[in-house]
Length: 164
Image (cartoon, rainbow, N blue to C red; front, side, top):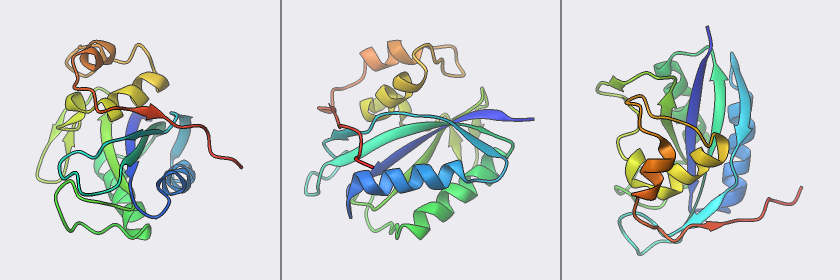
């Protein structure tokens, strides 16, 4: 059985847009997983500490036969391969991959919270989700489009596609 999963991507170190593009390729290569769609990338101010470069963010839609925790393990392995260091909460990073939605599942344990705990507070997550699926709903039935309208503006700037 496969499940629709949405992954948020972010980076503000070492050529952020290129980091995200490589991560999309790696996500597409995960076992028992198909890349359905990729959102445009957006630049935005950092959350939390402002003494760091702007972030580049995006999202992908996957169909996967992996469990949520197996998918999380793969996301963390990809982050590590990109040199991810967790030095400061909301600090700079080469790559951040967040499991945003996993079907209509609601998960809360010591390793994973789905929907992502901050999803509704981040326009740089909500807008890419809407680019992927304009009618997307959260497991509680709320439309992502309605949540996006209530979200704080983080000065999103849509980036042009990367040149091949």
